[in-house]
Every structure is written in C-alpha cells, then in structure tokens.
Image (tube, rainbow, N blue to C red; front, top):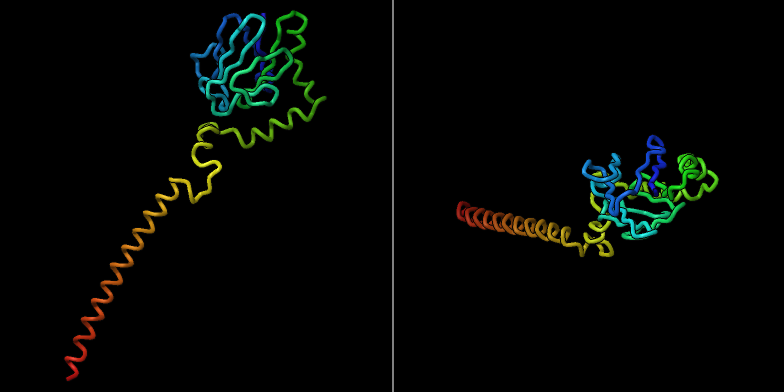
Length: 191
C-alpha cells in the first residue's frame, strides 16, 4: 500500500498509509492525516487515489502545496517526487517492503543534490505567513497597481486632505474676520 513519509527533522519517518480514496491533510484533528505544524493550513490539501495515480489537490492553503518545488493546485504525485505542504516535506513510498525501510533515510540523500533544498529555503523565507493572508489575497489587494491607484490608500489620502483643507479655510476665515475687526476699531479710537 502506498504511503506518505514525512522527511522533516523531528518528524522524520512519520508515515500515513493511503488506504481510502480521499485523504485530507491539515493541521487540525478532523483531517485524515493530521500534521501539527504552523506552516500547514487547518485543511491544507486532499489526496485522491485514482487507480494507479495519486492526485494531490490544494485546498486554498495559505502557504501552498508544491510538488518538486512547483506550486500546484492539482497534480499527480509520483514515487520519488517531493510533496511540500508549507515547510513540511513528504515523499511518496509506493509500498514495496524493500523501499519502506530505506525511505526514512532519504533525508540524507538531498545533501547529494544540494541545490534542491536551497531553493525551498529561499521561497519559505518569504512565503511562510503562519497567521497572515494568502498570496491570492495579496495579489487581489493591489499587486500590479501603484500605491496611488490602490483604493484603500486613495480614500484615506483624500479624506485627510479634505479635513486639512476645510480646517485651513475655517482658520483663514477666522483670521480675516479678526483682522477686519481690529482694523475697524484702530482708526475709530485714534480720531
């Protein structure tokens, strides 16, 4: 039976056998495969068994689902590929008895291919937002737009400018009225 094996230090070798057609993976207890890690969403992704294929479907997770460092929304996971959920990396063990004992030792093998782990660390440094917003929300909120055209900024700027203009006009009127009163009284008292 195929299973997912966690590669991260501290969780190395922790596995979950894919025995049902649909497996949910996430941080909360109601998932089929519960992984307690801050970089994983409460309901991060689903694993579907479709005959010989294992389909991974992202559930709009905050930190994304990646296969071999490529962000996916839905893709087939093949044996030997790395599945990354937030900062947690997993490998697919196809289920042969010889591979299951050697698979947890695979964290040592990435050192032979050092460029692969270096790339996720760069991405993780900017992508991990444990309790923040998703990249989709950031893109909708003004990506590709200048700050001047973003509605949240322009409304505050216009409101602030309007308050200063009104206050300036009121102060100017008060000063003019006081000057008129003072100049009208000065010549009258001097005669």
